[in-house]
Length: 286
Image 1 (cartoon, rainbow, N blue to C red):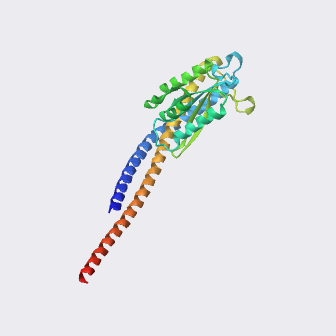
Image 2 (cartoon, rainbow, N blue to C red):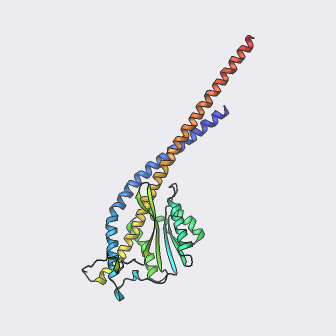
Image 3 (cartoon, helix red, strand yellow):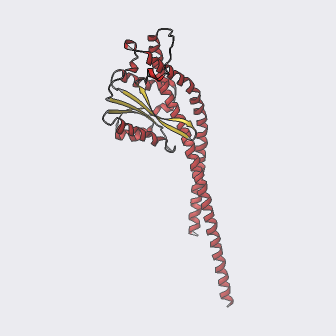
């Protein structure tokens, strides 16, 4: 009977876990719907603006060249790692941490590498291994363009001042609810379209090219950074929804297996009691 009591306890525990994971799945699904709509509506505008930015940068030269497109010998690198504040999202956070570590340890092994972390999960690990100059975990309390622009402006100002020669974003790009792709995206300097690629386009500038450089490029960089945050935000909820769906399925299978064991053990216990009663009665009759 002790075995039956243990099985009942395990069945109750697994059922409780299943209810929690199922509830978390539904919450993540609701949040994912809004986050997915936001990133899908934003992408066409961002992609077109990025194309304009690259073409504009390719057409600039000499004194009119943007300060954000200046290429220098890479000695100091800033990596902005975008993860989340919470776990239970499968490999969402660990993939960002692995990609960030690979950049620091392999790609820029002989460089001075510093980090800005967004999300507690990235900060908890990376701050123990590297120089994390700032963390912006609070951005998810109010994920807006205005708040994202503040972080982007900080990186842009440090690049212009010569503190960093390259700024790289590491984030999860949202593909769909079940799929995210880790992106290592060069934020600064601006990547130009080479003349030989055949994709550069001619534009008529109104107002002057210099004024457009002054206005469009900083705005485009801020939007690019905001898109990375939005991509990561949608990816987080997709990854968590998928992880909780799998956890619920596993808990359901385990509960059913435990119930089967319980029923078999109960039937065996009842059979043994019957045999004992029959055996006792035969002994009395004998």
